[in-house]
Length: 161
Image (cartoon, rainbow, N blue to C red; front, side):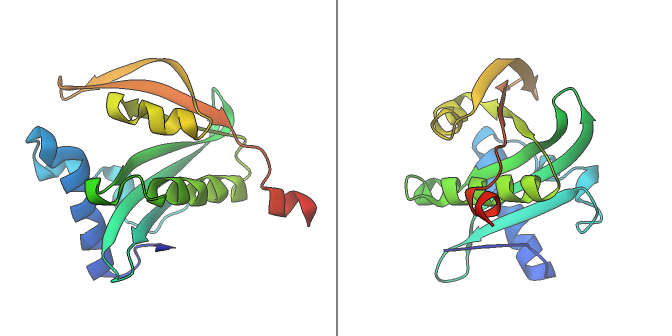
């Protein structure tokens, strides 16, 4: 498995397809849910996209962070559109991808990472050290979310350098 930035048009299309099939297709939501204004242009300051690729190069996990220097949490980032294909779950893909995005946030100087997590993801994030902070929105009047977050401690490698 490799974690990459979806820099080519082909990889970007596969990244968005993974987003759709993992996050929206199970709820019969339209493909228009797959992107937001912060995806265009896809390379911009304060936004990082990451894709997890399997050994054959297929996108099996996706995630984005948005830098929020003046947030209520201090210099923070928000995790968005995070998903791993159902067939690739429980194999460490999500934890590896989340760890890379946490490192990306640390590289910006962020001290906190937060997200609006779906019910089915609460256990995953709790195992990664995130706390439930309260209820979040119910998106599309269909999918309840919960606000979760955690302080980002300095990376052990960076602290020892």
